[in-house]
Length: 305
Image 1 (cartoon, rainbow, N blue to C red):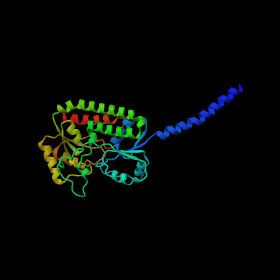
Image 2: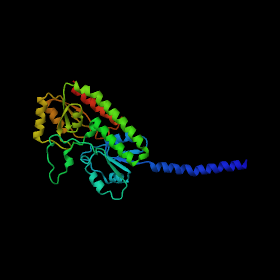
Image 3: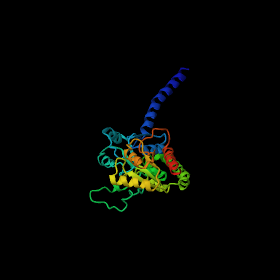
């Protein structure tokens, strides 16, 4: 009986030694993934699932005029993986890569190998010396569900290279994301095909990819960045366009000033409706594509009146 008790005690002591070690090893395999802003966070979270923790450094603000703080840079350098949209949008990533030194972080550009569209009006502009060609491209690719699916695939492919043991998991989730994205396009294509209006006016030129996907035309009051305000001449052109084309609504964005849009509304009598380019965290429990569908519904409801 004493031998049995000693044997049980020996087994328990062995387990007590092994189990904590296994937990430490398991935690050591977890990847620390940091993302730049909401679309990258939301898409990456769906690809990763419960395998690893995903964080974002910028949740409440637009991304165009965002500059990472010292704490943000430290979080990126201390991560295993940093995922961002594009060098044209998060231009500060170029310095991060150049100065990362011995930091282990691996950087994934979600639009790598994707064909970004030239900013409307700049299609034929040549790159001058000292100018960055990436500034000619529209970075808002995530607002087209199909392009968002392609970004999900890029993220999955890169994660699979870094973490090959879970490659099938990433690829399965990327395929599921793409299937949902295609279903969303299939649902809304006939709705927009039947819409009475095909042109919509937005606060800034963020919805070109979305418009092109659904056969629509966007007219942005501001430029490609939400912090660019139009000149007096451009503002007058917008007001004239609204009047001549029977535009009934201007779409404005959450979290940024809509002062210019209000000027247009006061001079034309149009309604002002909120539609998000999903640059900031909507702070809800919906998936990225569910939040995307909410914006598509807002747009389709207005254009179908």
